[in-house]
Image (cartoon, rainbow, N blue to C red; front, side, top):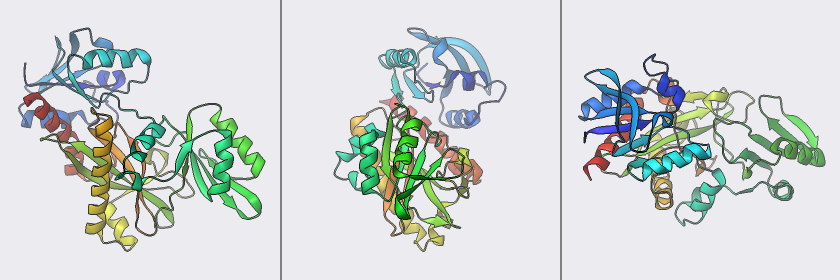
Length: 349
């Protein structure tokens, strides 16, 4: 069946389709886009995939049918494949199918190094280095404020913020706790204990623009579409909760329309949005030269007090729900339609 598009989901999401309990995934939008494009979505999870076929849910004639089908020629990966077993299985599928966004959890330090090598994209990067106790001491001598964050996690988990105060006292934010004030050696010991040998990086703090006294950044959805070219599908602002050091909605952040944030800071909303889009597209182009399957990402980007644009991190599996919070329903739908347009383009090649 040449019009079948595979959509690979986490097992929990896949099992929730018939119960309409799919968490952040708005499966109905995939179905709607597929019907409009004359395609048949076939939902799978790795557990039910064999060498050349998969048991999955086929959406056709407005209903789901459980059936075993050949591995589709094109697959949009929305599953988090972190274990070696799942990665091997995904690689095996990729040998007989075009899997886009195959690897969708990208090590932050690896992405930083790829972009640092690009003349055009490196301008958007804050200083960053691999975490070590020695590099922590260096950071404390160089920066007035910096983040220590896991290289391989999402939604703001495990992130520490460190800022210098008068008399060589350091303020450290950790988890949901109130910031603690520590002497230099106490700070080093505290952070080292939290890192506990895991893979972390140190990233200089961007002096983010503020909204109502709280820092904000932007989630920029950058996706390949109908001609295989990159485009920006949507931009949404994320404002940190009072006293918090991360803007993630999962950590109490608030979604605010980017135009409102730009106006609040005296930026021309049309000009600033265009600048953000151009930066995001440049970064996506740079990354896709090194990671060919990358095609659907959510970039966290910041704007400093002078209006300069910075890349904070790249999320390989954008959850997209910020548009739902903002009632940007057309944009929310387009974040599902665009990968399907790209899938149709790949099928036609």
